View 1 (cartoon, one colour):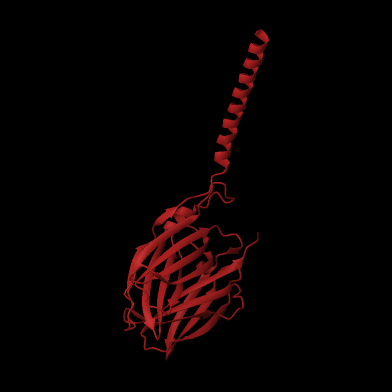
View 2 (tube, rainbow, N blue to C red):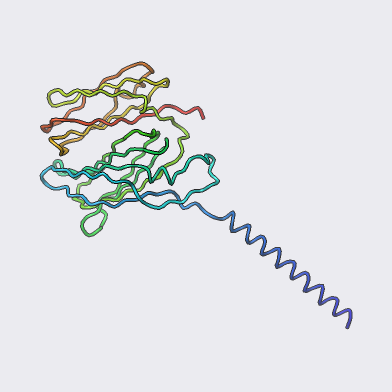
Length: 259
């Protein structure tokens, strides 16, 4: 009987130890297996794009929810703060048989690379168009304009922002001086690189206004695909086939990172 009792006690002890080890491993597994759900700022907005080429404008900040993975390499980059700190001005208009949405984004927090996803919805909240755009190097305190369009009329739109720390490219727009002059049926854009790095793929987006309404948009590259070297200036013409009295030009560009 004593021997059986010893065997029973030993078996219970081993089983208890095994269970304790198992619980400990399970706890650690939970910690390691937590997943980053991604950083997303989302906003649904109303628009009144109609058949009269009229535009609406609203100044709204992006709102949404985000989760941050503390294990990222750049621990100083707060993607949540960047996403929610992007200020948005939206315009809508119709030209010919297409409906357009323009988002002017201002980065108020930190340099970043930015992915922008947009859904265009009809009055029944059905998606009639969806697009994505990327800004390779979005400098703090600068603005960029993105154009989205659909062959179907939309009454709402929804956007999502996914910012990341700049890794492959450095921002340069903060060092680009842009002057715009108006000629007949066109605008002439002059861009001077006042920084120390060559500016690559300097892209312009031109918004043409009649009063406070957008009548047309255009985009292209200043100097084609050539770099704008430090201290140099390049010019580009952009046409407008509607009557306009003012134009706003927004730039995008980058320089190679030393990673």
